[in-house]
Length: 465
Ligand code: NAP
Image (cartoon, rainbow, N blue to C red; front, side, top):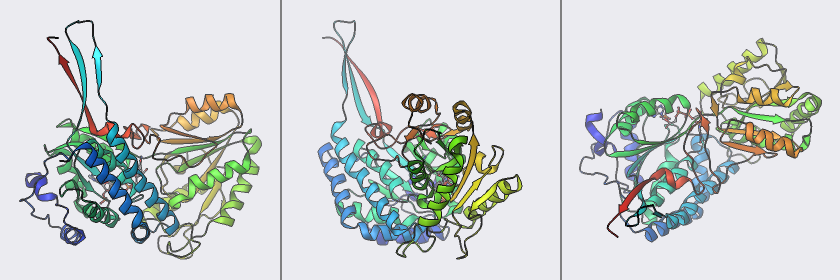
């Protein structure tokens, strides 16, 4: 496979029709022969023009926001309102990086040598291969591609098998915006080809950078592939977010935060709370109010129907995982407060579920759920909660609710995660750095830091002065 090389895998953006054709071809198990085409690794326009093109792409996303949202709902099952929110969030990365493109600065350094100056240049890394998941089929692309194009790189995007159409629609709009052919490329690919395509992307000498969002297990495979040619890598991987409610918390605020953090996209977000840790004094009140809020405000159904707040899970495997975690917890002594089984609608629908009397040995505490399951552990002391929260190999997001300022500083500093929500359940924003520590990944996306992932720092020693 790798001998076919990237040239034969990638496609010049010539519109949606060609991408549709590619999708069918690759799904049929064939690799399209596009050997007449190649990528040169550099977005061949001046900085200001790059900025304007990204801005035009943003404008087109906003003009087409309703259609783009429908595509997301159709391919992922996400409720339309959430899909509309994702499109706005997704477009904002193009806008943000259209502005950041004009703020790539170097440095001049004075050293102890009188006749020399050090110059620091920032240059695009080259072709960036981008592999994205299905849970945010648009935003996970623009968060990377916006930064890459702003830096002056070209990209090859491999979207998830379940959600190729959002990536292709973005290609159509990139075309309309006037982004030159060969700058934003998409390789839609069936799941049984993902491994081979991933290997080509991570080993081909034409590619300088890998940016991946997905599971930690896949991230490790890609890191191995990338190691041989020592490519730059960014990894946005899995999480196991703790959500801690201390006795001093405002319970109503904590419940609102828990609802937002847990049930967005049916619990299928990497930053979604996976482990609820609630202090003894406030525990019963929190569990009662959380269950009431779930019953009152969550409605499972077709994402296109008005009022639906939770669509289906992405596939049968995802439903089986939630079911297995619930059964495991109940067998080990957990109590089902609400939900607990497949939804009566059938298919990939699962009931929003709240478990209490949960212990640390249960699967729902040790492995990422990626579904609408909220397990609650009761704790006594702050140190105990922090220890449980940090007893994970991953560290993406963490949340806690407290009205005690000293405790807020202590816990925010002690949590081993890349992002902390203090009295807040929704933390993502284009202006702030997104990313994790430990096995949750490498690098940051969005914010003023995101563009650095696509820039090389070059030092020039200027002598003879
Ligand atoms: P996944 O199985 O790792 O898939 C992600 C992407 O990698 C898909 O495009 C997939 O293609 C592809 N892929 C799978 N195996 C591959 C291989 N061996 N070589 C190359 N590509 C391969 O992850 P997922 O289950 O779809 O997504 C959920 C995970 O993503 C969760 O763990 C979640 O926490 C994480 N996530 C992290 C962030 C973050 O920013 N940190 C954001 C969103 C999601 P196919 O779809 O064709 O299999």
